[in-house]
Image (cartoon, rainbow, N blue to C red; front, side, top):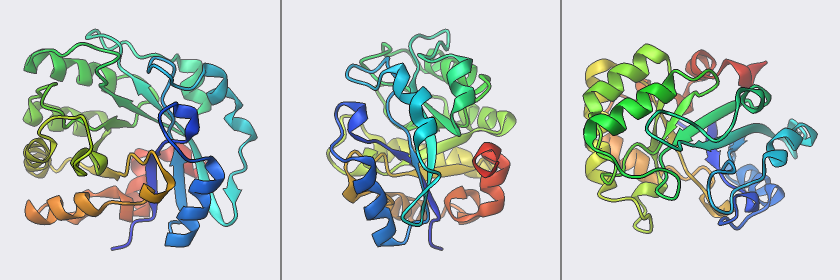
Length: 239
């Protein structure tokens, strides 16, 4: 099955990425990816985009050179109370939001603390995806997390960049296997994300595909290939 969407893509506005929006669009067109989502880092990340960046996304064309462009944000979880670095006014302006744990923004916690933090964030209106829950510096109870994600109608991300050998995240491939087994048990849906920080990684799900095959994870629980499931989890992107 060919993916139809990649929602975890960073432009130069994230401060530590290397491609412009136009370069990303051109690459997506070249590989036949019809829809991309731009999800630059929110201001809590050092070097991240200013809040004005996200409010000004209204100027982005909905389609560029035949590629549909969605307006997203990767928000940073700032404490173990589940505080994020943007407000509801901004979330309402975005087509979707990914919420992630990043070491510059939040300290490492124990299994219960980290798990409950992510569950609190799942309850925030406008959060549709939990980004890269695959870093064992933030240990998680994956059974509890998968159950909660299904309950909250939130997608858990399988992050390609976590497994590419360059990521600072720890032990991700092993951790993702635990995550996939929990999602399989609870029939929890996941989404592949390239987490591209350069245009050449857009739509790159090589490691995601390898690990779901290795885990015999059912592809019907992966939404990147299914328009009807994308509508279920991300209704705003079809408005």
